[in-house]
Length: 181
Image 1: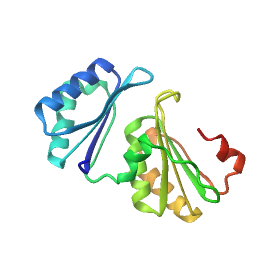
Image 2 (image 1 turned 45 degrees about the vertical axis):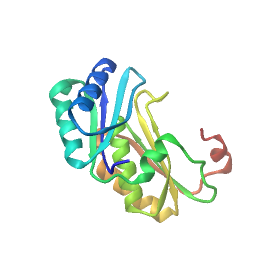
Image 3 (image 1 turned 120 degrees about the vertical axis):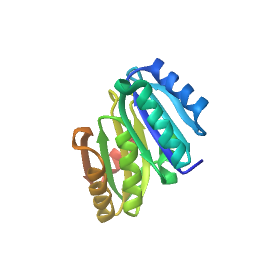
Image 4 (image 1 turned 90 degrees about the vertical axis):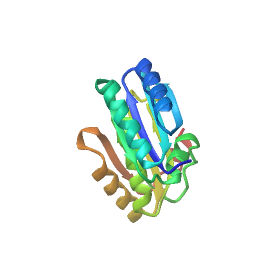
């Protein structure tokens, strides 16, 4: 996958398909994800070179500015971010957990990327929208100090109005780990 990534969360499924189609027709990008998500939203993740992603994001703004709920662009995404989105890992025993909850998807992806680039943490899961009222959840694990540093970075990357919560679970109980789904 190309390193630059653009993320668009739209309030309209129909407009999401329109934007995805126009981006593919007019830019050299790869549709990494173009799908409806609940509750009636649309998520578009594209990859390509920085100039192509920037052009695609500008095109989306011109087409459906009022329908964009969240957006973000990463010029060089950490490979573990999209991996955590599609293939969550099990929670490790004996590690601290960092949990970041956002009110939209793009801020969670930006927070996940910043967290894993800032500290020696393992990105466990990036959960988006499904069953969470449009929220997103980032979960990472590591030593307590590393998780604290990653949480601090994530908090600085996410606008305060988009951050629902961020917590450190220093010593998760085994029963909690077994309940995580």
